[in-house]
Length: 458
Image 1 (cartoon, rainbow, N blue to C red):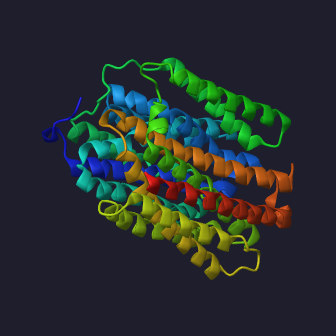
Image 2: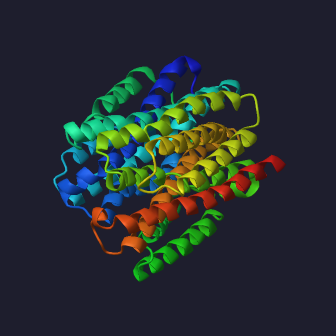
């Protein structure tokens, strides 16, 4: 079912996508800066702190693909609308949490709502905007993601330091309410090109269960039980692929990866990029507060450098991708990221703040040049009936990469600190784990450059 243009306004649709694209990364990045305060308030150790971020990412990642397929069948606007309602309710629960388990459970629910929004945002833009304007619109949406990341460290640091971490969640509620009301009032259209298809419930359950096991197990390595859980997760996902190859209307069309080189390699590039970069904010937030001794506000002011530069370059590169090769642009962006990561491998307690700011500027430029063209490449490589799945897939690559990135960082902290719960008492070994993390991320991103360049042969 294709919506008629008279039943919606492209600019209002883009505004709503921009607001939600801003709000969700704001929640993630603002929480990172508040982790030490949350830890003090609710009694969390270093590993539990990381799960405040990872619980949200996990539930978002595992539900994205099923929600993308649901959106293609029942309507992308409807799923987008319901997702925002869930996000609003979950934000209230996070704000009033009185224990670590309650906060983590609320973050899981928040992630489910986010998966419904993430899985439809780019699909709505691609559905509503013609190809010659799509890159520009995607660039604006991606820029709003980075704008959320830009505001988060500063506003998050100020709110945490002066009003408490709970206000991080309260601040998003009015925005969510506005999005819900505006969607009801102004978007009468619906997009459901796969309407009538049967939803693959069996495949969805297999995917959610084993994807969860893979991610949870990976973040708990090298614990022996975690190795078993991770292995079961890998085997389960292989079973999922085999099941999907035999289903008439699969929740995830494997043929998109098998027969569409641009789609497959663009998603691989996105996965590698986020796996090599997402934990930078987490690690530097702890580094600046525990090693450099900065308060949350000052740490946030320093970390804002990267997303501000991202915002500037993402919008510009999105416009360029309407005119020039998305593959070349995103490959250049990935190479710039490699440079920034290698520069961070030498930081220690004596590193000047100016050097860290310069590194973050380089990384911001790379992220901005990579993200918009790569997303445009993915969304332009599929038929309309697969737009929900394509949107969900690129979001899955992003969130799975983020989860893997946090898993790598957490694993290294665990290997170096062990069962110790106080980073401030183990500064030397924590610093070593940060340096090793950046070395691994730089190597991983180098592989991503080659994956991105391979699309040029298509």
